[in-house]
Length: 516
Image (cartoon, rainbow, N blue to C red; front, top):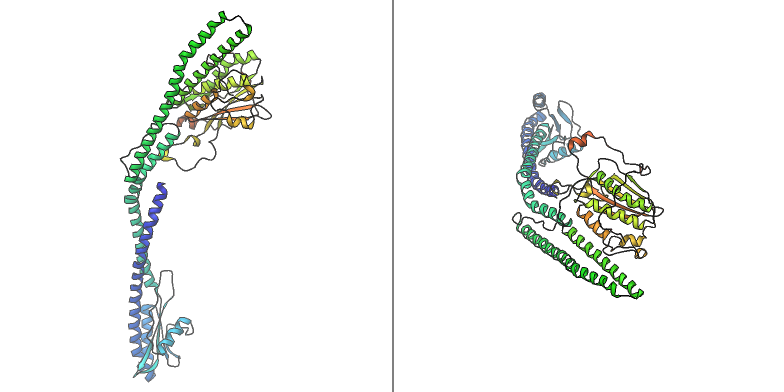
């Protein structure tokens, strides 16, 4: 925006300078031409007085000598013609009397009309001055004097002045740009840049962001004050919502635990098999209710978290979680393969990638229909469609950074197109998996954590069947020395697979999560 405003200001100032300079240059050119024209009028009058006697007496030698001296001194052409347009004196060579400009001036002189003032001669116009003056004696027209002069000197003077005006205009434009326009535009746009930065922060969920309301024009100060009030209102509303969810979940926890204990204690007093079955179902529902409350508490904490993103060794974290889950996959007889290049890092919230992998691997184990599961880590280009304009204050947005993709892929039944559009919503579960234990909060919590760290979570169908869950995180910036020393790596071939890891770990202690 600053560049565009500077262009507009420069265009307006340049237009003003041109509007003032053009009349000044034209007036100077007119004055130069007038001076030359006056000199030619005086010279032609002198020649006309001398030529009148020469034409009456027929003695033209003295007039010829004067014409030769004049042409040698002023580099002009001189011709004297009689009333019949017959040339009597010429120097240094004949003038084409039929040339339109010469013929028009000659006819006006023979008709005893005053000569026309020549038009302005610009540096790129090399037409000569053509001036004719009548030779008269006692009111009778005896002939005319023609003077054809080059305009080199006049054009040179006009060119010098035009160059001086252009240089002065450029200097004035540069002074206005550096000393006036740039500081004023910077002063006007500083609050706008701050508002743009703060809006970006609020869009990322940092509702405590404020801008200064003491800089810029009064309208921008009022806008900044309104923005701060809006951010405070949104933050207060969000905090109230989170507090209600957390407090309600916490307050329900104790009565739910007491209710579960009382229901369990009823087992000794129920002898009917159908009653025992209903009793056990009630205990299971209480456990499911407890899991749901735990999920709500974790979600409230995740939404309230304002931890900063830190570099995370993606290769190490993914390898560790894969090893931790391998025992569970081996127990079900499900192959778990990994493709994890070493040394890949990304920016993420603390423990975000660990919890995300736990959720995705647990979903693949429960809903993958026993099909092989593959984990891969790759580099990816920036997200398409982002604005290529420079971000405010030189900041680099997440979509302009290279990304790191962590993909968990299975070959199970997957999800339909309609289910993919709803997957990840709170409490949403597929109708085909209602009998599988879960609350429908696991993937929603995962999406909140990933997006809070500046990443993205995508679900897509795998061909010919299955589900692919992809976590995209901004790549961690490398130190300049390290980045310069490492040669560029080609993108990995998706058709190549690394050897299956053989290490075995323990099942994670975290509570199981679910996807649908």
